[in-house]
Length: 443
Ligand code: AMP
Image 1 (cartoon, rainbow, N blue to C red):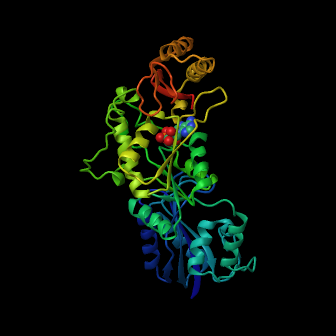
Image 2 (image 1 turned 45 degrees about the horizontal axis):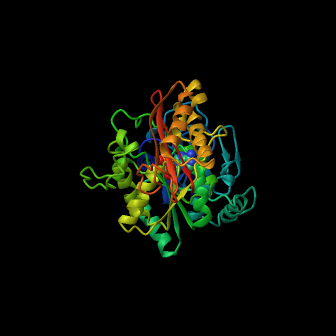
Image 3 (image 1 turned 30 degrees about the vertical axis):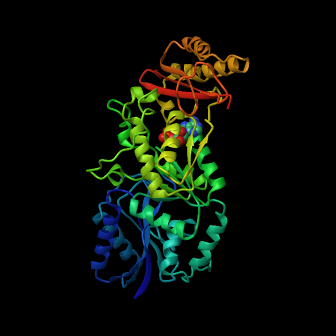
């Protein structure tokens, strides 16, 4: 009998069930005994086209089969687990079974290279392999699996890998670990499709907290009928890569059914703030935002939760909810990140066609004109608004929804800007694309 190690991977369908059916098949093959299987880990795809995350692990087997016959058995197990030939190299698959080690043999035939040629650079192979056989020696490099894994971690040091969590139970487990270790948690709630605005929040969290947790949840309840829930851009793999680049520890990306039980009934209303400005055209929006943020704060219990000033009314609603309901988190609101021409970054900017995109900086131009008037001494709300309207008129395709000069905390319109300064809030549409922007005066 020879001891062999098999790399396991799946990123299509019910990944755990696929790998189980492949292993069940192997266990039933005469001349193969499955000895042990490592824990399965969620990993970000490496190479190949854009594709969903993998579940990876390693199995230790004992076998009487010769290497090529073992390879046949692995390919049959992949087929039984649902894999069909696609012709796409490194494409997504229901099951991928790689022969990593066959005893300490070095094999090079047309069909087989053993040890597997890429395993030394793949943490998703080395980590589970190290669970089972840290002292296993690579016959080519002469180094043990443990040494190879340490070497890989050293080469990648500085780049922490981001863990993807999809269930509340796993999220709670992670946060209990953080709490036991007295780590401070920075929470960045998002709907994904990351741009520099999101990344700036992650960077601020990284700079001030021990653990950075980003939630990625396109919350269905905050979209009204006819809004863009179905076409809201989604790019999980790219987002995970970007989060990894910012040193994010965890991305929590649950499905709606994981977040809301079917008989969910509770919601939070920050009375008055949810029916004005953006709330006037999006009646249930802020109630849904406050509710989901309250749930995320309860799950993550962060020291600091990070939001963007870009969604100013949202930040006021959240600050007020946190204060009124005695959440312990500190709320940090960070400046709006913009394109060079002033357009505030937004996941929705990609809906704009060429001419709309050319005109889109008009929101920021209008706000800047108001700021210049303010700096030149203008304090009348109505006069500042007139300046804004003048600029907005220059964009023929823009349909304004509202423009207001308001108190930065109470959001009540201000007739004359006083000591507390003011927030100027703007919203409107280019075609079906709704854009918002804002600026603070005297802050
Ligand atoms: P979203 O994914 O659109 O829900 O945004 C998640 C967080 O990122 C919210 O707190 C937003 O206010 C913030 N954000 C969105 N766009 C920007 C931006 N251009 N600059 C700074 N923060 C932003």
